[in-house]
Image (cartoon, rainbow, N blue to C red):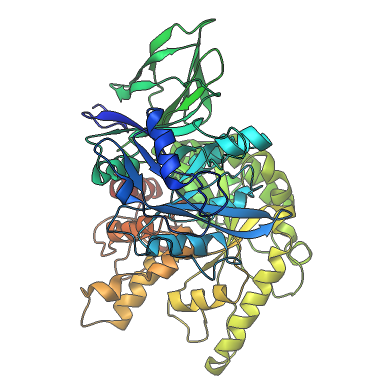
Length: 600
């Protein structure tokens, strides 16, 4: 099957979606900007003045479109970074008037700006992350972006800080579905125009066709020196395991496979016009970068393989001691007996498609050396890990009260990114004291987060089963209440437990089991999710995906995708709960069901 982000039939149209006029801090009027860009072969332009919506459709002609837009900027603090976000809209879908100001947003955070732009009918593009000194963790936490500027020509010309490729690499590595944009951000104070642009392959030069192409990635981003042109990509697709590319003459074509394998083709002069590569059998994504001898550059969008979307990561919970040479309990010994040694267990689940192991549970008083040994065994198998933790009885800083995880967390940066630690809320001693338990839970998490940067972890708060009226987080709303009391920072998030949520819905609506609203998690909760616990339900939770199962797995995955979830889809099986089902069968069936639902 042939796969590409480029549409089959269409024409190429060059445009710039980030420009400033005399309405804000630019030197040219909108009319002068339109004239300049059209004379130089462009087909569309967005005048995106600071915090001011520009709708210049009266300047359209049959071969040139003016795209409505604005740039909203906030947080002018160069110690912590700034956020500038461009919004573009189709005429008729934007909910702002021409020259209407975006008021009251100057001191808001980036997510608030994105939400504002989307609520007013705009697509959101994060501008010049390098120039803004954007922290990677802050950018990774944002949801609702159509894309990020991979090149901002004005910042590169004036400040040498316009290339944002490393940010796109990190976003793609974390499965964030964003596109790479090129723009001028022209102000005309210096020669900062006609050098950063996108080339869109669309069915026609209409708003509908251009925006459809942008939303499916049928475009490239380019950077060219003054009075020069970047290489043109004519075709880029994957068919039968081979990537094929055609382009205008260039000196360097580089294929990036899964962000960790580079396949370059070189020439001393601009003589390369096509190339093909045989891809690894398990390749999940490919993208291409073209350069000519003058280093003018064009970037493709990633082609997502394996079902047409970026491969979501699957995790699996395992008891830590089943990954030690000698299992300590009958449950752990059963797993080794049915599958094999720790290395054989990890190889088995890795071959199924599991990429992360959740150690469940790791309490504060576990042996630190044993936990580190288990972690190293996981890392040596090429997997990452997360931890299902529990609040210790003692209060204090994380490093003081949770010694069992300190060696693991200190070594983790050499093997993976931040380790996700999942907690259940503290229980109240009486139902009337639930608010106090919620407040104490928030205080504990806030205290732990003070060491998140040095110990490299994130904190996920899980919604629990309604088995105790003393639990302040046995609903999604309870979890959101605790999180709302914490700083709005990427270190905090929710753990969406599919089985817990479904069993609670069944309990609360015994006579109306099929009601969609009762079985649908809140959108606001899904947007806070950074981790998941997934298990079947057959009257009991933490079951493998074998008949009978009632859990609406595909629906919950859709809810998370719509909320732009980017974490691991973790299967949380509790092996003692199904003693008569072989462990190997339980894991195989559950991974297979999850993969089928993800690829549906």
